[in-house]
Image (cartoon, rainbow, N blue to C red):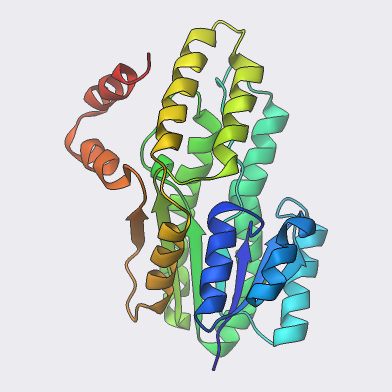
Length: 270
């Protein structure tokens, strides 16, 4: 029986690559995103676009209801949609920080709540939460982004224990540098809010570092394949790490003290 999948943030990057890749491999895929026009090409590739704004309760409920009405169940939920605003904690408006937490944490949690009854009923489910290497390590100017991804790590660890007895697996994906429009948008936002503030020199250094990371970034298909590996494993790992620099960064975080790691990171920002 083909598995029913919802991939959020399917209009670009990792979400789009994952939706296409899973559809090509026999899954019935719904691709959710705000910008339906960006998903027109998915129709010819076996993906059904569905309108989804993960920050809107009305949109979240309507999306899940549509899938349950049409497909009868949701087997796999891939929470990929995300916001990547950067900027110093002092400079970034709390309204923007709240929006980022809404998209990256509360939107994820609410979609899980909405999908779980179907999964429990069928005693089967896979919940894949796209975190980041930034859910384990931090860079300056990313306070709220890192806060959201650290939250996803903790949420996933607790959820995994809650739903295991219902035949549901929770998998965290931790991408490193991956080609995405989010990095460019996040950098532009950072320069707008902090570029001319007392943190301006640091912002310029971080922006330059991110430009270097973007040059070596992996194609989104690398993460799509990692996701497929996780959802098809009989006993999946709790975490899968992939893309540019991810494993090396996590290795250094493991072996260095906090202050040593801080020093290493800051030495790369010039």
